Image 1 (cartoon, helix red, strand yellow):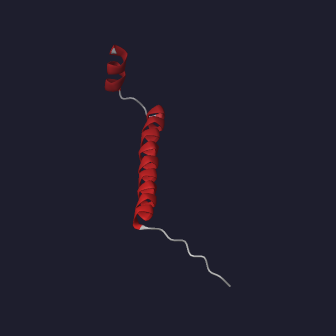
Image 2 (tube, helix red, strand yellow; image 1 turned 30 degrees about the vertical axis):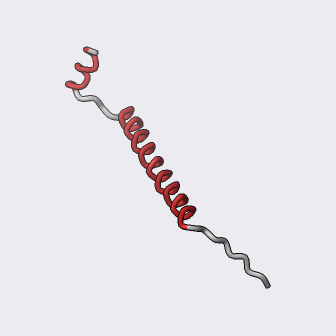
Image 3 (cartoon, rainbow, N blue to C red; image 1 turned 60 degrees about the horizontal axis):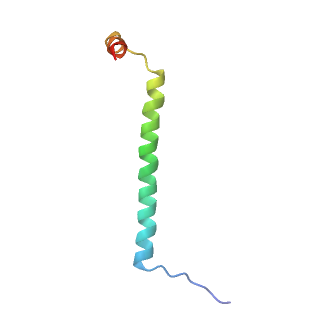
Length: 56
């Protein structure tokens, strides 16, 4: 029985790790932005915020 081993050099391994870290960071930032937007839709405005929004 023959065993085929895959070889990853340091550059390939580094590229894979970099892509995973960047993808994870992108997902975290996107989730944070959309969570703030979603939360602001359901948030009540205080009277001070309501008057400043009306003046704009």
